[in-house]
Length: 308
Image 1: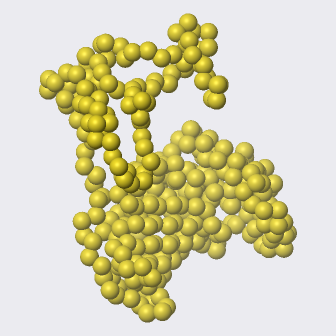
Image 2: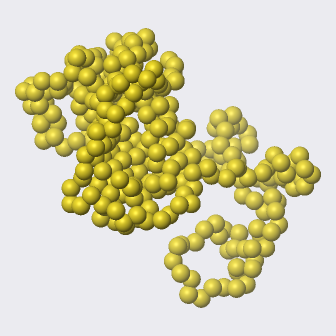
């Protein structure tokens, strides 16, 4: 029946039913009174008299009825106040407009450049090791950035600092979740994770705004604005990641154990899990302050539609 048609397959309709199409379009033109609305609320319990139906597959009680008349009335208003309240969201800010493909390449191997950097006070603060590859295997107006940030060798590299790096990366991921949503809607992505004696940052997408993505990610990593709630969520996530042994095959878990026993600066899951509850908010903030004070050694590989 037409009233049960919600969506069809993505295949090509060879023989469209013109009458059915017009009927469905007519339902859409009827406005809010023809809408199908689903509302989930904890206020509706199994003992509620209005919960007169039961979904056997999901095991939930629910009710079904007409849309309240006052709702339909509010949705049907055409005055300026109502129209402004239902206006569409603003235009996406980072939609690419420059799609020119640059046919430049470093050849079969990337070229390295030393890019001097400075602190906000003007003093020298090391250098960025930049590797430029140019156009890769696919000729597209896109690029990939792979950055490795290593802590100075002067800093301790014990199990506490390993856990601090993991918590720091998870806190930064949470802090950046909302700001980078606009980037994701425009074909851009960024990921931050702890890796070895530092961090790994990956950014992909259209090259026009990729520099903005990189700066946003670095700001979230070096100066994350977090509180007790964000740290608690980071603790749970890191604990879950370390506790979940189903993510790796048995031989991989065995290799990790051997590495922890035979390699310096590699620690077992059990040791890191035991360390997580010992790290509080102040300890993490002290670590972040030390990271900003001593700096990070940066190595960046760029591949794609980027000039030398």
